[in-house]
View 1 (spheres, helix red, strand yellow):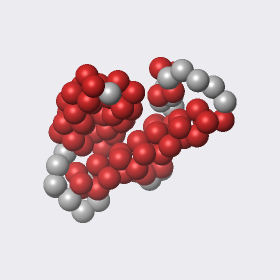
View 2 (view 1 turned 120 degrees about the vertical axis):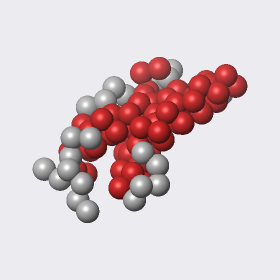
View 3 (view 1 turned 120 degrees about the horizontal axis):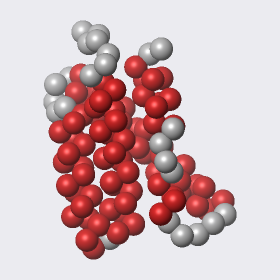
View 4 (view 1 turned 45 degrees about the vertical axis):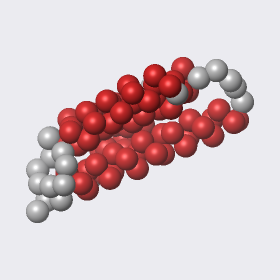
Amino acid sequence: MSLIKSLLTRFRRHQSPSKGFSGSGSGMLQVEALVQAHGDWLALLATILERERVITSAELARTLSEFAAHTAEDRPAEGQILSFWASRLNDAAATLGKFPSVH
């Protein structure tokens, strides 16, 4: 299985970020899909940045986690989403360590 497919398969198993949001209906499903799509994209970007030796996925996850904590003080919903993304990046960092470098 390719690295990208492996990462996406792993990320799809994560708990939904909408469990902490109130509301129902298709609007919440669209928000959840948007949050998850951005998380997938962010994990892909982190993978590329690490491969190019710009920043490690673990360092990016730590930075995003700190940013999420500060954001949550004033904007809790945004902080929750950022925290969810930081968690995804942590998982991506752990997964990346299991794959050999391609170049």
